[in-house]
Image (cartoon, one colour):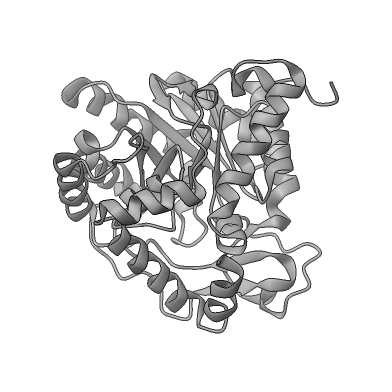
Length: 361
């Protein structure tokens, strides 16, 4: 069905198509029958796919990356599609409209997207209320509840020197309704945000998370990094993450690089995601695995079963997709999970984690 739907959707403005799909998923999530149909059509439940990471049990290693469902309106339907986790956001302490439209572009020739959305969202308090309602209603059946992460960014109107307080407000608002949280200091679409990846500013932001753990209770907090960091910058970020109790790393966010693209939309400002990011995302994953034994979430250019398996072999504990989901549709979930199971069977291993280091075996 998706190829036909894609033909229609790709004739629309990219953001308008996004809104229509998200609205449809939100509606489907309210119906037990719709969720049952989605799970039967697209999910691939198998207990062998379970992943244990940063104190949480994931039904499978494949998650939906932040950015598609910023305000958490479609979590139930996305879980029914078979994702083991759904990361909502990026959300900010203050509600904000984001950057002016147009701000989302398809690079069809490259199977990529460029976005300069600018953290458009209804604010952390609104997201917290919605996720609390989901938890109370338990709209997950049939099937397991997905792990729900909340990705948190900086409010645009807040000055960089005040970023720690802004992150404290946003993280505190969603702390109790998230299974895990992600500190996003790597989006290219909020002015100056990426400077918070430098050692001292990053330490100030991460100190906030340690304080919240002390006052609000233990919660895994992950750090999302840019693919445009060099080796020395990655090493600094990892060392700072280790020093401040970060539970895992998400690699990577979108890139500002535009090497080898064919689409005329490649000239648009914003972060590039999709297939062209695959090689760099893999390289960053491999470097992070050399630097750290923290759980790693690999995102960026995962567009089929082969790329997913390669990331697990290179040291990823979990995977996320976004642009691949836009281009390939919900069938990508079953394709990726089937490929992971097949790789496990070929190598005679019992868990996705056992695929680490098996490339070429």
